[in-house]
Image (cartoon, rainbow, N blue to C red; front, side, top):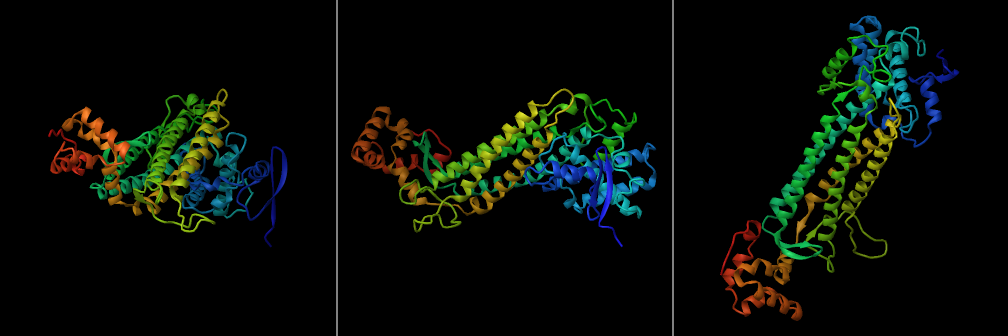
Length: 469
């Protein structure tokens, strides 16, 4: 009959561990100690996969160097493959907020992999004589090189997903730029009429700035390819053989397909969190710019009768429990809120990075959580904004044209033809009498209708060329 519990021991004594669990006593203690958010480390599957890659590379390297026998190394490798395939992630139960610089995360991985390996070997869970979490799975390693290395691999994988989503959003903006290329409208500065432009130019600019942020994320992603695996506790490589660092890095690069390289200074790499600050700053930059675009969308669609009303956002849901017919710009609004969250996470990451002491930064778990959350939220924001908002936007073409015709701002485009003094006089009269600049120019015979239409054409607004009367 299968036993319900097994006894495991650690430095602090014995504990009962459910035989349904692949994790062991140290994970159990961490689960009890860090009941903070209710969010387990398995909430980011890429981190579990990354840990498995690190442990597999270590096992294969230790086999090559004679530190593990073939049977044990093979069982560890097969156990890691199960995690890489997405199995048993529910066994990673430690809270994302944890003390110990990620030791609990590393031990969660060590214990799960050890017990999976024991199962593969035909042994009972917890019978660590045949495969030990520390002696075998963690051989030649420390939390202080395993955790940062796995973190960087997981960041690479998550940033890759974000880049795909950013490109979807960029393409949506670009398509609207093409669709609205002939829609003449007023540009605005300080929320006041400026000079004419096209709605297509406005959306094309959104595509361009998103492309710039894509490039920034690509560059930030390159920073995290430098790892400290082999550094062990503080960067000196204690308890790892001389060739281990080079060989395990090569093995990990082959397994992951990521261009990983070993840091030139493992002591510095073990405590330096500057790359995370850079990645976070890049995410914040994109979030703030994305929020600005959403502010624009809310303004441009405001109304429908008493606002700008230049574009129509897709109607997603009723907007009020009291006002019939009201529809709100809910998708831009939720993206705004995501941007604020990302900005707040950036501050947390900065504070956690600054608070490292001497040879280790123990705050890396909160850095990891906030970076993963920011990437996840921005990933969802890009796809949601694209699919539920941008692709469905339509233009109120006639209304845009009417606003241009009525705007005082169009006199700026007429300066070269009628002179600054005439333009100022027309602008003043239009403001005082509520008449359109277009009408006054024709009435005063300052320009012919043909010439005026040429100057104010969408083509000339998109590609201005100097025109004189």
